[in-house]
Length: 146
Image 1 (tube, rainbow, N blue to C red):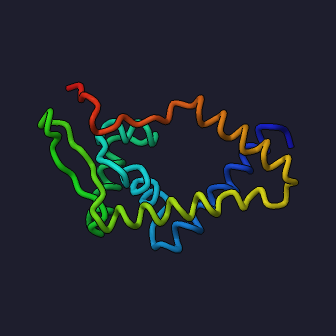
Image 2 (image 1 turned 90 degrees about the vertical axis):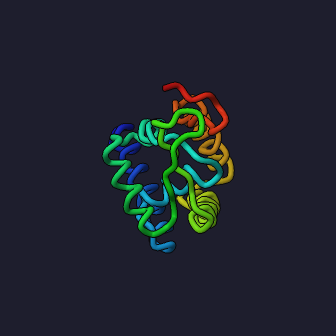
């Protein structure tokens, strides 16, 4: 296997572990990701769709399914009425925090067979990749551009 193959299979291992954690909370991975993304503060739907690599329509369908479980809600922005904000309900916030905590605790288990030095190297490289990736979401207190 070449480097690309290894990265592909690493992503499969990570996705399987993530899906297992999500299932324990009776959530799909998409629902869990959504809850984790809005657990601390409301987010603009358009920005959230872009950050999660989803179309606005796909995100809207995901939000509909998650809202039926009373885990998220939509509201118009206080600054610009046509901007839709997504927020976690109190139940959704608690569930998002619980999922996030378990992911942070248990996802590193994929590296348990590595030595301590290799685990530190993996943490360093993973941090560098995330820190240089465009995954940032604007916070709710930043200006909203119409």
